[in-house]
Amino acid sequence: MNYYDVAQICLNGHVITPMAQTSPNFQQKFCNECGEKTVMNCQSCGSLIKGFYHVTGVIGLYDYEKPKFCENCGTPYTWTERQQNAANELIDFSEKLSEAEKEDFKASVNAIIRNSTNSNVAQLKFKKYIASAGSEIAKGMRDIFIDVVSESVRKSIWGN
Image (tube, rainbow, N blue to C red; front, side, top):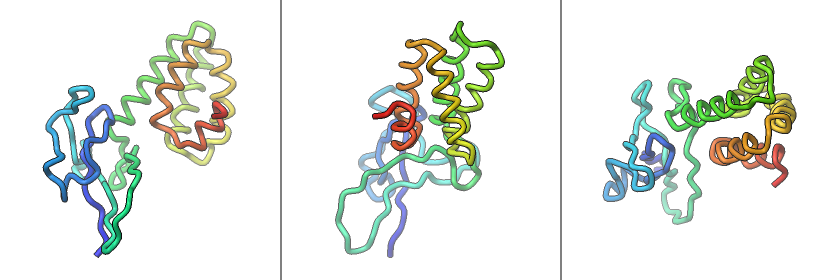
């Protein structure tokens, strides 16, 4: 019988274990990287966070990627929301962008994080605004996005 285990993740997004149910000895109340509380449930609806996918009779390595949104209620997990808020705060620091450009930049960040249907357009806008916002903003956005967007999006925006 194949099944998903339960993941335990801190509120900042550090994966404690993708096998909290089958290996409870790996569970921690607090993250050893940042000290934040850990969770195994969506903070909005209470559903369990999907972890490692067990396949009966198969032993293998699994590269677990934490989810960004709850598959039950669609709410962003706390770590996703915190990264989006950090990106928005960073955008607000830019003195080189107008208020309208900042709002459009924030909308493109949201579309990219959500991998929405207009994420290709959002990526183009993101590249335009990041070039105008300044190198410190660009570096900060890269640090935030490294953990919240797919590898293909990272390559599209930064080329590596």
